[in-house]
Every structure is written in C-alpha cells, then in structure tokens.
Image (cartoon, rainbow, N blue to C red; front, side, top):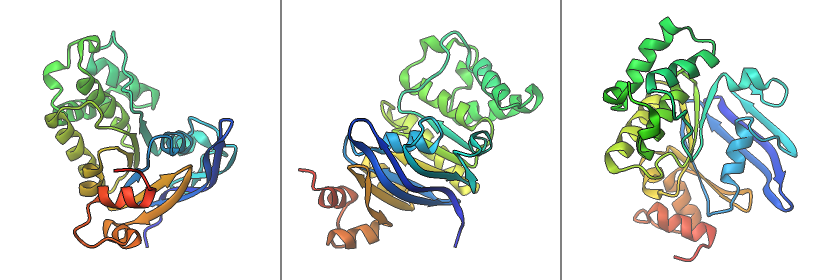
Length: 246
C-alpha cells in the first residue's frame, strides 16, 4: 500500500457552528483525489487547514509524514495550494511573477528560469510572457497562478475549484497538467462542483457533508454505497449520498 501524501486526523474547526467536524481523511502518494460536497460542507475550510493557512481547533495534519502544526515550514515545502480566486500581482509580467515566487522558495534565477519557461509553454502563456497581468482574463490569471504553484516542484498539489471561470481550451490545459503531475509521481487533491471532472480524473473520491466525510472510494465503490448500478453517473451518486435535491 502506498504511504500517504496527506493525512487529516480528527480535524475540527468551528465558526460559531462546526464547519469541519472531527474529519479523518487520508490521500495516498501518487493519487488523484477529489473532495466533493454541497455548498457549505466544509471543503474550503478543510483545504485551508490542510495547507496551514488556517489553524484547526483540534486534530492533526500531516503532509508526507511532516506534522503541519509542529513544523509548518517543512510541511509547506512539499505542497502548493491554489485557491478558487487566482491571486497574481497586477503590475508584474508572468516571467517576473514566476521569478518572484521562485525566490520566495529560495530557488535561484538560473534554476527558476527554465522551469518558468516550461510552465509558460505548457499552459500556452509564452506569448503573453512580457505583458502585465493586470490585463489578463480570469482564465489566464488562473493558469499563471497554477504555474506559480508548481514553480518549486511540489509533491502535493491542492486546488480549490481550479476550473471555475475557465473556457474549454484553458480547462483542458489545466486538466492535462494535473494528470501529468500525477503521472510524474505527484499527488493532486481538488474540490470541484464540475462532477464530470471528478468522474473522469479522480482515482478516489471523498464526499463531505456538514464537515464530515460521509462516503469515500472509487466511483464503482460509491455506486455500490449509493445502491446504484454501473450506469449511475457521479452526479447520480452525489445526489443520492448527500440527499441534495436534483
């Protein structure tokens, strides 16, 4: 059995009411894992705690065996987080932005430059490499933010709704990059409301509701849990397991 890239144990967080409620979750190394749930289920709060951006009320987070609460700097070096709203600096060009992010990770310019060129080529941003990002569309900003997340070659990539607002071409580029990251031995954890994406890409799927993991497994295993046959889509499974109205 593969060891774990991410392990959450009894993780809890409340904002007046429980947002994440004693959540246990383990993602294996080299796995493409999708965390699904209705609005307000606790997905984003979970990811923010998993990446060290939000302190849990209780519980633990381990990233490739490193305790996030005891040694956050070491844990964060193994991961990258892409929030649902792309965050780039408007007055920087893509090459400058990637050089800046690489510098934050202690990567020298000689090493960062070829990485940046590769990522910009992969995401079809090379032709915009010398333009200020303030004029970029949301999709272009999302792709640049993803390049920034990958510049230090993280083993674990955590993404919150990475395809929101992307056109079909940009979404395909991002999906291809994520699949390649896993093919190269990396791990991807993402949330998405586009269930077809999770159905096609994810090796395992977790379903969260009211801050608790209510189901987990391959699509076939989730179909069995939901009492559906092989023809059942992930949408059918999701609606059955969460009790959401169609």
